[in-house]
Length: 76
Image (cartoon, rainbow, N blue to C red; front, side):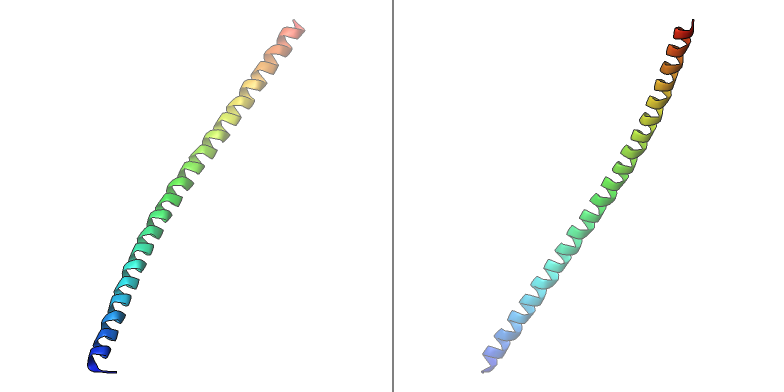
């Protein structure tokens, strides 16, 4: 193995390490973006659950009022 072979081998290693570092940076950035998306979707889900709960309570209240009105009408 001559000095040219050693030099080429070292250059290939550096290129591979640089490529690996670049791939790792890309993967970490992608992971960060996905994490932000999960947080956004989680907040949206919580908001939707709160809205569903509010609407459910409103529906129950309206149904109770309607039932009370029906009972009053039936008694009179």
